[in-house]
Figure (cartoon, rainbow, N blue to C red):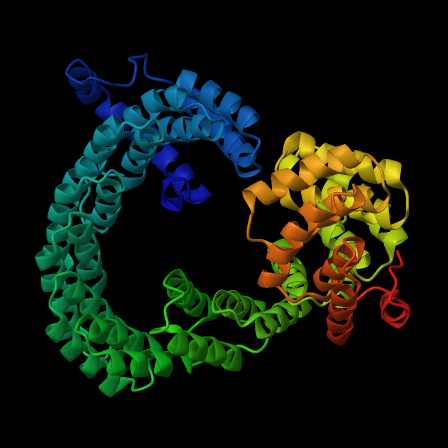
Length: 586
């Protein structure tokens, strides 16, 4: 409180001079009283007129330094004055205040108390004592200082507010309430007192008393909509929804478009099972630009937590549209829309809203992460490359963006760029084993495409060292080894393990069959390919089946399967020649 330290220079000076002039008259009285005081000014010989003049001059010089905030020099001058006139109340006060400015409350306290004893009707002296006690967490003593002030200083009731604040800061709610009663008796009923009382009752969980104070606020402030809204909240908390709705209806008669009133009505109607009315009210609130974006986002997050849920999905989507419409320049509006649309599987609109969000505010890592993830899920590899590059300009040390960039290049067959990005990201993810596995998986594929088989094998082996049953690696590694007729025993072991775990996956069955085929085990290969073609009509699988049949001497059946593969449009480059020549080409 600034009142503790803002005492005018002239006031101090006058107090000092007045005390000096009266010291001779009151000397005997003060000496007699000193013996009964717990803290009293020291007894010294009455100063001469010349000594008093010297002391006053030292005091004035000290005040000049005090005003210049040179508190150490001010204190030295005040202390010199004190050696001559220790019973001067203003001088004791100023020494105490100077010690306080020098962050020495223990040194200040004796002088502050002496000032009070020497002049009991000066409010500033009590305030300094109270401040010193408060600073040392001596709250009971601080409260006592305020009560002494109120008892001894005439017309000092204004300090009841300080006392109430002190009680409130210490959660002494009953004492604060009693102090508010004293204030009300002196100054009459006040709006802020009603508000403060209500807040205390709420903290005491006394909802009925809080409602009672709220009714007083409504009676004395019949045009303040905010009090009607607060009262409706209290009534809702005390499970009185009909009374709360009645209060809100009154508020809306004053402010028909108040979005907060409509939000509360939505909640109350939802509680009563009136779904249509609840949706109507929340839409009305969201259509208002007066309802701030943060409140809308909080509500939408609550909706998101309830998804997926077909019952609330339509209204949630409409609310995000209203949010964007009323806050078209807010990145948060587009971001929350993207979050919601992602959950309800509207991936492309979600990705587009995320892009609008980063256009307004590009600083959010998680939004960029969602963008590239959705690019991947939408199989938009070129967009994934573009957006990951934009993200890397902002977050060059985030491995995840190097991963998506490398993966995008890998899918679009830019293998050199792919392995470059993936190797860089791999170095950044050295302390993240799970992410490291993902990088090595892609590097295995990338290096294989570049025909750098040594690095490809090393990357795949690194994955299997951490995750021995990794499906992607077991499938690709075994298949690529078989294509190269390299380490076929290892290829068979990996493919066999994969099929054992996933016996109905046609891709894995095809891989195992192909590895067997490359090992010359055509009968076994045929067995697994027949299972695969029963599950899938993929062109590669059908063509492989034809190849196995050809090796088993079933030429016509083989040609028939090749013809089926060709119709799919995704067969090998040899398919036409195989069909024309009725001969196997590899």
